[in-house]
Length: 490
Image: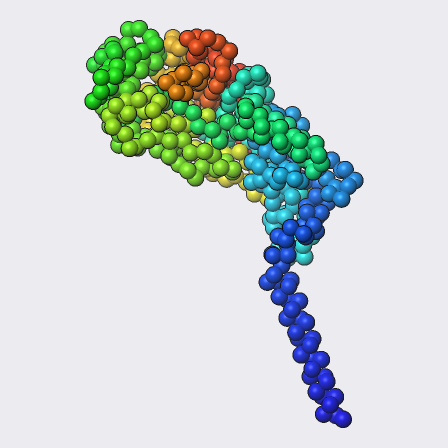
């Protein structure tokens, strides 16, 4: 009898071990597959069972959470949603997340382990309260950019040159992310309508669309030529014909302005002489041009702010004629507005390019800091002496050249206009560009660098110019930054 009891006890022990092993297998090894199973609603219910953390601009939230009282309890809300959509993106119960809502989802949703007050807390599946994301944006600059583009298609990016902080990031036309927050029929209709819209309002033109930069790229070409010693004196003749026959072809390149033949670099920059800069690019060579373009940030597919940025490109597989066109921002040269703001910022910052960033710090719900941006890596895009000369050129372009619409009383402003041709046979409405930087008379260093592109300026084709359409928007953004106090801790 005792032997039978021992056998039964041993068998029961084996069953218990088997149960424990199976429970461990399900809870540890197979847990991810159950979590990801489309039939498992627990994760989704938990995700929307508490308010989401907020995204802050100048210390004030531009997002919120609305208690619906339904199964998926909290929906995302947005203050001035269209103005901030290129920054926040959307957080939708139906379509997921984009931009900061996606890149910082762990903090905002309360799942980031760093939000736990103790290293062992939060390991039982419970969520911490959602944390907040403090952005680098300046409300006044964002408003100026958004209002400047009102009714037009285009984008604005503004950077603090000495740090890389992104002060404004606007894309137009835009949309209200609140329309996508829930999971009802209206959300489905909004999603379909936004995706059908030929103007693509959900496209972030400031960082996800590349354009031919046109004459604003001449800042890069001038830097390359000066660094290579192709030009040593801004006021010496450049031995440039007008028109200029592209090397190895019978195609003649002309200018919008008169009097560009053999002009010094200073005048060529002021009046944006295509022939001078095309020839300078050829004389500098593809290696010299590519080296400088790369140093400014072109051909970098890994830039994140923290969400990804489209790669700006300078083609290195070109013949001399193509190089000439590339050097005036045409052919295959493409840039995001953020990239061109980085170009202007490098000039303003003594030749150094600071990596741009959008998140200053993340905090717990109570305000305690979780993580900060820290120091940002730098690249030397050009020699400091070259940057000083380019500052001169850009200031002259605003004082006496094509960029006079960007002048600000009581400030030093440098800028460069651009009008980029595109479309089959250059038949499309030209893109109007302007890149610039500004320093208040009491400031020790430039406070802001801006890039503006207007895709469909309201003017006849012959009247469209960066100076006429984009420069006033840049001026408004620069004025907003110069007049507003710097946030505490910046």
